[in-house]
Length: 245
Image (tube, rainbow, N blue to C red; front, side, top):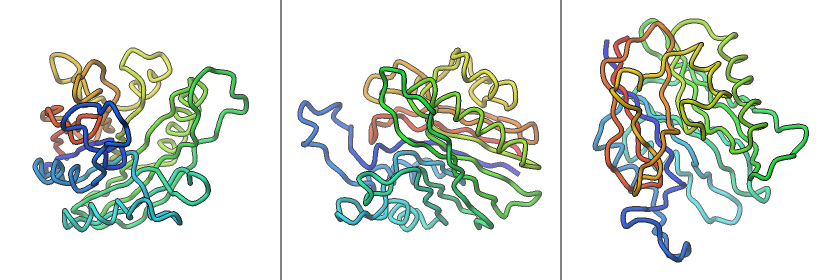
C-alpha cells in the first residue's frame, strides 16, 4: 500500500503569491487558496499548521472544516491556544481515511521564559486512522524559544513511547536538521528527506533558504520519494513524501 503525505504550514490562509506585502494589512486572507495547493498534489494525509478556528470575534471561519469540505476529506482541528481567549489556533489533520480517535496533547510551557524569543503555547495533534494494519499520525508546530523546543521534543518522545504500530510525525518544527535539540527525533524516527541528495528548503516560500518542515516515519514505513514543490500560497512551501506501507 502506498500513501502520499503532506505537511503544510498555511499561515492561517494568508496569500504570499506575490511575496511578502510591504503592508501586512494588505494580505489576502482566504484559506481556500492553500486548499487549492492541497488539491493539486492529492495527498492522502495532510498535516496542517497555523490553522484558525471560528472565534468569538468572527475574524476567521472554521478553517479545518473549510479545507475538509473543499477537499472532501475527513478533518480534525486541534487547537493549541486561544488568542485573547476567543480565537482558537493550532494544528489540523485532513485525510481520505476515517479518523477513529483524535486528541490534543499539550506541550508544557517552559517554567521560566529567559530567552529573547516569542513564546506561544504549543500542542501535538494525535490521531488514529482506519488504515489496514493501523496508523497513528502526529502533527505539531514547535515553538521558537529553545526551552519550548526541548519541551516539545520531550513530549513527542513520551507520546511515541505510548504508541504502538506505524507512526507518521510531521509539522513545522522551527529547527534546521543540524539543531542539537532535534537530534533525539532523528534517532527515534526516519526523516523522509534523507533519501534526497540535499535537504529541501521549505521557508520562506518566496525565497526558500532553510528546511524547517518535516515528515518523519517509524520503521514500519519506507520512503519512496519526497519533494517540496514551489508553491507560494503560504510563507512555507508544502513538503510531501510518498510512502510504502
